[in-house]
Length: 411
Image (spheres, rainbow, N blue to C red):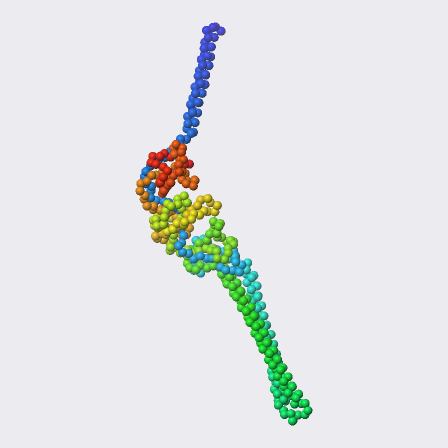
């Protein structure tokens, strides 16, 4: 191979090396620039919001449900055991007529007790009849003995009335002694008769009292048995009551006790709304404020009303819930018995009076997790703030911020 050819090959190899190195370098620089841009994109810029002056929308939204103003409660009746179980119950929402059977309780636990009380009543009646018969027999014996003694006294009196001159020896004195003895025996017979009458009378009184007591117990047990079936006091819709402390409806097989309401027949002609107000929104509404209510089942129809009462103490929203709410009662202007049913969910829009222009802060820039609201400025500084009324997106700032302050998102 000649020198010229060798030079040409070396030049081509050298060029390839240079190009390859340039490509690698270019790739490395390009990769470095791409990584830098991705890092910049992966780091989110903080969202800032501005505090400004304005006026919030004059409304406040609550959720609640319908309930009847008045209802006929159906409770567990008195029974010998103090408690029982539900054996049968009408379906929730069933339309019932006055006199219809709606709830039936189990009677097996004290049905045998009723039988025992009947046996005790019958035994008491038998004992009384036996006492009356025995007393009548003893009184007859005592009366007969007293009558015999009275006859003996009359005979002795006749004998004692014979003059002594017509008798011999001690015969007159014997007649006098016999009369005295007969009179004594008569008095004793009368005392025995009186004592027997008193004893028999007391025994009969005790027997009658025992029979009356046994009869009362039988009547109470019978009334309890008959009362184990609850019937509708009037026409209406059957509503099953909630099980206390369990957050569910009553159901067949539940143990219940005397006086516990297991169902009700609400008066559908007068309905109201019971809503829940979160404790963080305390003070936003007051009694007398007008509202507009919309049934979730019938969104095309609105019902007017006013806030009637706000419970002064917040309670847990449910079992084991950290959320606390105030119960708000709302009186409706009209009631639609054809559409409204107890338990229907309702959206409530409170017509809050429009406030004058005020300093407003975006709600997303406020932190309500502590004991008092706070805001984080764009500089990173956290400040305590006092807020007033709020809507879905903004709150009135009473103190702690000024017009033009920029806030970071609190989340």
